[in-house]
Amino acid sequence: MTADKTIVHLLRHGEVHNPEGVLYGRLPGYRLSEDGVLMAKAAARWFAERDVTALFSSPMQRALETAAPLADQFDLPVTVDDRLIEADNHFEGMTFGVGKGSLKRPEHWRYLVNPFRPSWGEPYKQIADRMRSAVIRARDAATGHEAVCVSHQLPIWILRLRAEHRRLWHHPVKRECGLASVTSLTFEGSRLVEVSYNEPAEGIAKGPSVAGA
Image (cartoon, rainbow, N blue to C red; front, side):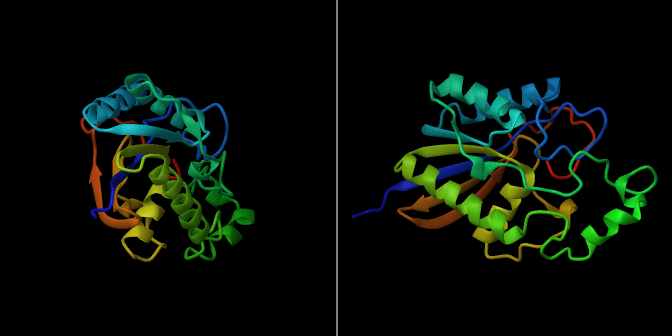
């Protein structure tokens, strides 16, 4: 007997309206920019012919706004799963960097001593564990079909690293997880058999990138 094939897609939210250039993390009130709305619609079009039967989202506004076109398109409720939330970060609400950024202030330096954990925020292993459990929930909800989970760059990338049996610590510029990108996990039964990546919103204008989004 052939095991059910189920695909869980991890959709990163679109571009955020963030004129101050802060690391917004889990702060409330950060909505999609005009381009971000276009990105969310482009992602929904990419999914249009797919067999999506379950839709989950991080509780953050930008993620819920990215999920909205999919909810309309497939006539599905958006189930909020807190495990899909952005990673916690000490530098949340600050600009990150030297000059006028937070790195100019010595009281922040101790949060940079261990990039392997990392010392500035939620441990990578904890992120991987919670994201894996969210994916299992989505897989079980859409057995034999497809599910979409709207989340954030770092959690999606950490989950991919875990799925591909790679080390979790990394340099942020090495992440392959663009705005409104789709990282797809294909399962046969409970066994992960493939990881793939697509950028449905490629070509839509993007503003300055802020890590931790």
